[in-house]
Image 1 (cartoon, rainbow, N blue to C red):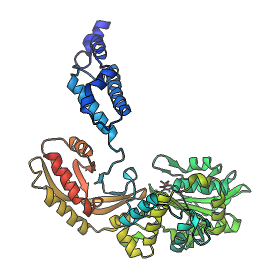
Image 2 (cartoon, rainbow, N blue to C red):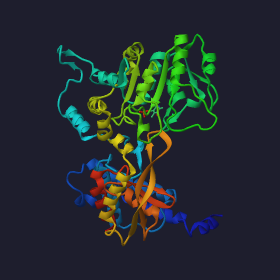
Image 3 (cartoon, helix red, strand yellow):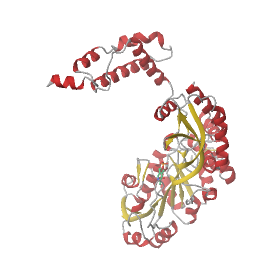
Image 4 (cartoon, protein in one colour):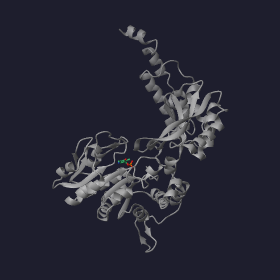
Length: 480
Ligand SMILES: *Cc1c(COP(=O)(O)O)cnc(C)c1O
């Protein structure tokens, strides 16, 4: 039995005796550390060296046991190289700049919205100097950190009151906890969304202590469905913007206006989780029509929540606007203290919000809006500038040309809408596409594109003018 076992796996896997030999040959940690001391900079802490060496050896051991590491013993130089690489990785910042060639503007995995120089300056100031974060300069007494942005948000949206918290998930949780803890909340079945894998309306509802009452069918919900579900226990009528998917075909949803009329009739507040939440009607720029925050305020919705770093183009934050009576209650909730935003968010958010006093300015100065509304001719010109810098220099290894493509809004907004754009198409001559993708991802400043119909594309909508030289240097350098 055991001989068959040995023979049958000896072609592609190691035999038991090889395994033992490999395990026995694993370096001792102390000796391994000693072997690289001369090769490591003085500023590398001993702890880091020890952990790096330990990890490399542990992984090797695990690999041998799992049969994922097969074959020859490593010599001293090979081991040293592994330790040094691991130490280098540990000593360099883990959060690193990247080039977004995916064409997804609000890319949650790549940090969502970018901030302008002005917004970053405000953030730097807030970190470097003391500030009036909670200090009222008129009275010389303690002030409210929220007052710094509340007025601006109210002016921009027309809302009676506003509040800012850590993110939109927090805004929803806090609002539900305040208004509906221990009570029932009525929601359309078609709006029980999951966002990015970790935000689910039913689960957030449970955490808030509210009971979810689903009404209607997945594709159609009528006003009478809401009305029939209202009981003594009902505390809130909730609408959720189905940001990241669309139900198409035979559908119907109740508008905010209709829900507000129903709420008023029964003395119930209405809340809408707007998700991406735009202050500008982007349909004027070729994007699909989405409800703006102002429209919902006008419709009389009592509580509206939205993200700061999606279509608004600011830092991570959750913004709550609506009727003064409810917002005041939300502000008093003890949970608010746990979900509050910090001075970095506040300082940069204020700058971004101020841009919106002049919508034309906002479209130019808020990077997310600038990228979303840039026309494809202008993207094409930028693509040509990059192409000119690289084409002849990498010609031996890689063909490149311009191709028309479609970018995405991202952040769950307008899921099925493609924004007409241009991409650099990289066609490697000596390596596979997967290898090219891996090499670009391994650069000191990783470059992330997308593979579409067997083509590697760098969508130029999300690669901005001031990055052209960097991208060119990275690409040319990679092939040299
Ligand atoms: C994105 C989104 C959220 C979560 O917002 P975060 O700012 O990521 O916490 C909640 N609800 C909807 C409808 C969303 O689109």
